[in-house]
Length: 238
Picture 1 (tube, one colour):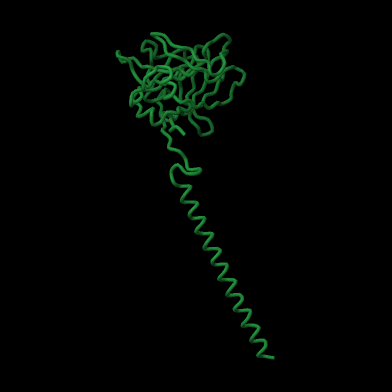
Picture 2 (picture 1 turned 180 degrees about the vertical axis):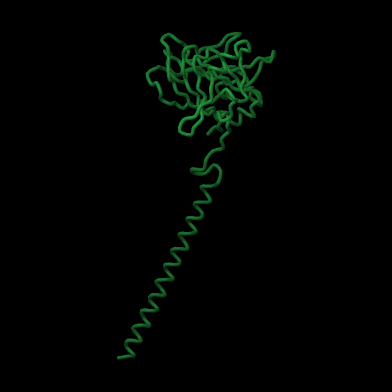
């Protein structure tokens, strides 16, 4: 009787050992597969790995009166109005530039931005107030080169009150071409994100390659308009 019980225990022990060995092989195999997957996902350009982002402006730095640091006025004769119109603000921990009744442009130059390597410009904006009859409401200028007189050559991306999205207006000798990327005044208080390939737009409109280093970016909000601008970044083309 004791011998039978001993044999049974021995068989159970051997069976448990085999089961445990099989479980260890399965677990080790799963760990190898999981580790390989994690490594692959972390590799640049694979799966969900993030693309590199070039931050052009986050609106984190500001001067004592709230005017964004490293920005300049296009019209030096009306600096006081511009400083009152453009203010860096924060909402839920996110910084943005608030523009109220500006009627003039501000610019940021000397940006380390290669538009060929980072051709996709992105930004967010939110319309707060739009008087009737104002056109355009606001715009972002991507200046990727200068002419022989060192005047910036730009493409103007506008928020129009009436023109359909995608409308292209050719520029003249003293004005740049503009593309409507946002239209209408109904969605007040709502953030919109824009993504434009400034490199391809520049070549298509101006018919030559831009400079190796972009001249800069500019912002304008029309008189009477209240609008907020979020961070601006540049991305590689997919």
